[in-house]
Length: 292
Image (cartoon, rainbow, N blue to C red; front, side):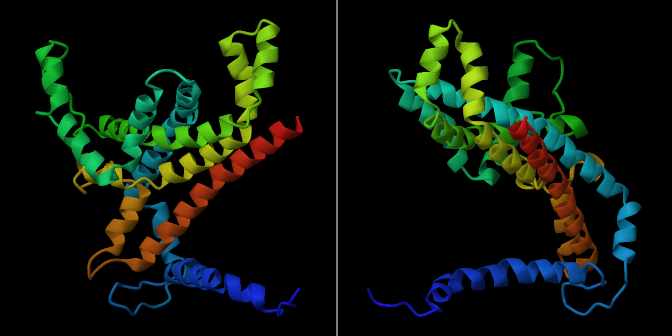
């Protein structure tokens, strides 16, 4: 067998290391440096110490954005953790026409988030299909302000995210369900366990690690929500700009020739810390559950 040079493994991983250094490590370090400056998009900037982080404490728009992002996460997390699992259990069964349902549930995933948000915008506006149908049926006397009320707009965006994400997480759960032994289901059935009992005692423990992965993915994506809120509010942030997410704030402060890259970088670091907290909590809870 020919001997390999000591540097052969490094040559193989070199492209990936360069990619990580250029597109991940360097931007991250640059963001930290910029957060201590008053840099503009056209360059320059001087060291301002912790001024940008002190500004975070008095920014009312940031408080609204953080509240929106946390509510977004808290609502999306249980819905996108449980509903896709139930769908996966349903479509896993070999029934006539089940392929049609699998394709239908997955089709929103491959659609562009912007296109889907535009369709939802058309459906939910004051003269949209939903309000028109509700008024024709006599359910409401006037248009429901789905896109002009702060919290209705947030929950409309959450509905869009849940609808679009169901198929994606369903596929992840389908792959995990394939590893759950059917012998356990049959043994539980012989012992008299019904479908609900088998789901709770066999299926859920069998996909426990996958559920943790899904919750982490949902947490990160929900706290970083952008497209849904941006399109549904036409980039304005909704009534009074109070429907912005943290990512929308970062985009607002970093765009244009007069953007505040320093403050946008401080917002990015805050978002990283906020995202890291729930992930560490989930990992700790999972470790305790595994040790129990």
